[in-house]
Image 1 (cartoon, one colour):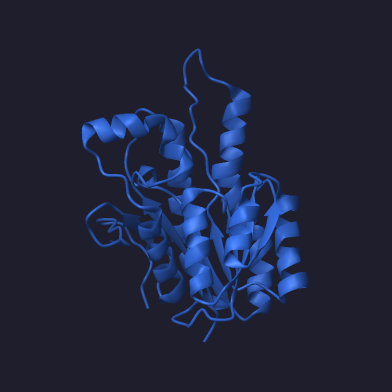
Image 2: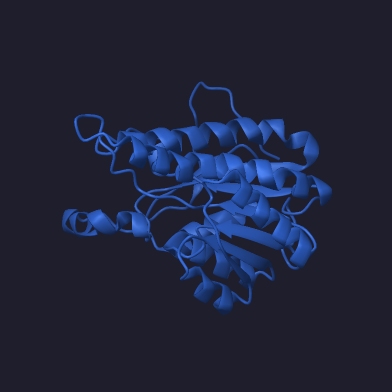
Length: 252
């Protein structure tokens, strides 16, 4: 049975990008609790504290660079013997308008982290996962990847792209024993919601604990599904989004 496919995670090696933040650090803790050796990557040096907490390794890394992603994977091979699980989680809010306030540099930076970081991370990780006979990748998308987001359309655009990538690669990588899924949380505890936290609280919208999202990521790592996009909402179990009347991946 390939790594991460209906398997016990004990003894596996995982890479978590954006591991200093709320969602990434919660997933790192959940993986470590399952016996996984964790490599945490982030531009934020606070990731070193998370790595110390889980007995893992920290690398200060910018996922918008393909070379940086390849260096992360090489570190996993060199220091941990290989790579089995990848959580491509690094992400930022857009804050880029499409009117007179459009900022091309900010636009490229946001797309570089939210979309290129997933694409480059996948490109870098696939050879290492194939060398292990298979594995699993979970990309952090968002509920914004499944619905309209009028107040931040560019964030919705890059998260929709991650959803499309997961659905497509979930089928395309099957012959390699590699599963690819996406996690699509609503308003979850993370740095991204900080600018709107007060508005969320005042409107009565519950903020999803980061641990709830991490539990769903672990379920995707330990299950047999591929090409699925699991949404996480407060007060209900995480599950695969059903794309009505659109062909999608097969589970199992």
